Length: 83
Image (tube, rainbow, N blue to C red; front, side, top):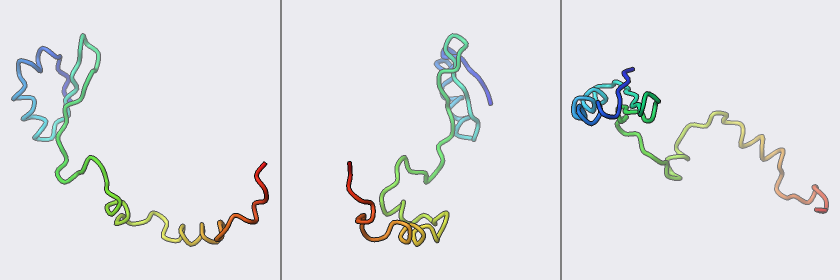
């Protein structure tokens, strides 16, 4: 992982972007302190997930839904009054 200052970034932007595109992670510093990260974009990675994307993921515990239904039941009547 390379570290470059803001001034170096300004002077060598195209070179540093090309290096990041090639897979290198570059830390940008401001007065010697880390301030930002320049890294490659992962192809196909979306910045957010739609509901259908989320539902299409494999479940970590395929039996969890059944277990929760047994534990929770259909109603909350057995919980008693709210105080």
